Image: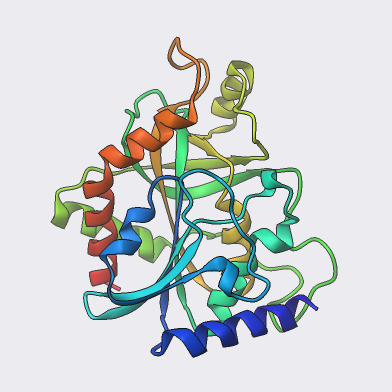
Length: 271
């Protein structure tokens, strides 16, 4: 049933968007402005696409924009569905599966994250080198559909070494400072406790968030090349002597808008 629904959604995108993308970008909380920079674009609200899950989170516009950057056709997903909203993980990764069926071969996943690494500053951009799945589940649980991928996909290089190198080159060319680190995904929606953050730091995590990992797993299941970028919009619980607030996430994302867009454009130019 999932495969057929994915195919229906992909067919709807094909009818609406003309030339199909080979690169897709999922835009995290407060980072959706990039979608407005695409030229020759066609925007479609998620509710106009069959079976497409809505996101009700502030900072997620809920629309698919297909357009061009540097002469390349791009699909920008302004908003995503989250596990903490009550969606099953197969729904969380629905859009990722549609992108693959459209012919997308490279997926850029972005998110707003909390900084665990105390050398990070608010507004830092972190290239994800690897992840820790602390969601308590996996989007591949259940019967495997071989039309998506094999039963036991390899996860030794979820985030493409090649694309990480491309991102580093783009950062230098655009004058955008970047760091590298490990992203840990948690269920949410409550923010983490200071004790949890200390534990995650011990595990080797540099940033924490509530998304990205399910999409990355599903993308690798289907053979897509993945790049992950976290915007460190706030320091994690206990790092600073202040409570956490989603408004702070949104404000920091707005502040780094220019650097974030420049980095994405630089990456796309090199793909």
